[in-house]
Length: 288
Image 1: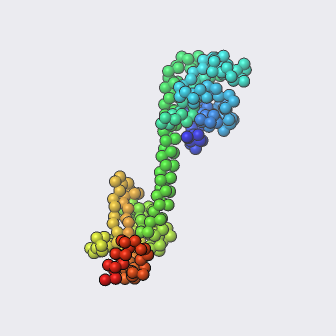
Image 2: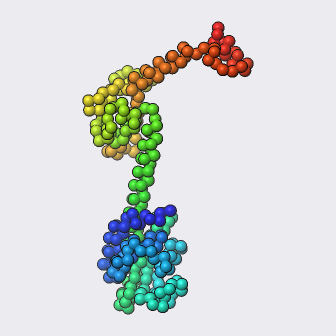
Image 3: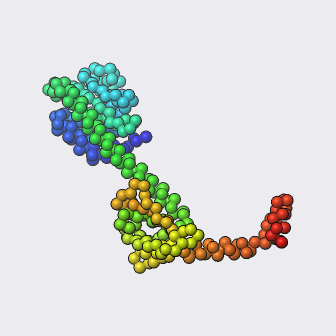
């Protein structure tokens, strides 16, 4: 559900409403799916951000059906039958165009003629006005889609950031020039840098390997590390996001090997708990 997406791009919506109003020489308003007025020109300008749910009957139908509405006789049209202002309506004609984002209707553009001359003008060029509204509706939806994409990308990056900070190895996301775009906590600690982002790292292979892992010399400013790791190019690189370097400080790797060796050496029959036939055979094998 994208109830408030048009409010997030209110400035853009207001600009488009002004464009329509100047081209068509009539008043224009835009409401979101909650029937809050996001933008308005002329008589509607002072009523932006107001709730229209008690009066926007044509807009409600557009939101419900996804079909545009043309009200040729405001106040007398069947869509106005429940409107408390139907006997005092000052509008002469109204066109309501849906703003569609994917499969959802996120708002409505309303073009309103309040005089006989405006009505005649709209009727004379009705197709032109409909095409204009449809085109502007697409522009507004396009901007809303950009905002949605940005929010999704930020959410993904936030989730990725939380995930990589739980990995017990260094993660550096780098641009094509070696500048760090993102680093996890392990990398910050080993590089002794609270904010490595925006700084250039050098990653030079030493030619050595350990347990099938390549050794590199990793340098950030004056901090230099011997690490084991691998550089992974991104499938769709950009200037800012080009590759990922996963690494472990060789000292941490050596420490793990020492701990594993010590654990194996400390393994005795008394450390094995269990009395099943399989456990008894294991104890006997170790005791030999």
